[in-house]
Image (cartoon, rainbow, N blue to C red):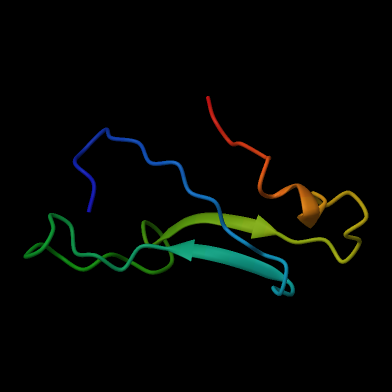
Length: 70
C-alpha cells in the first residue's frame, strides 16, 4: 500500500504475455473500509498494448546492466 501522492518504480516482465494487459485496482476507496471500485471506471489503472513483433525488445543479456531510473 502506498500513501497518497507517493510514487513507486516497478519493472514488469511481459516476455510471456500475449495480447493486451490491463492493470486493475480492486481495493476499496477509502482503503480498507470504503466503497468498492467500479471495475469499468476507477478499477482500470493502465493498459499495456503488447506487440507481436518483439524485434525492438531489450536484449535479455543486458538485464544485469540495464538500469531504470529518473
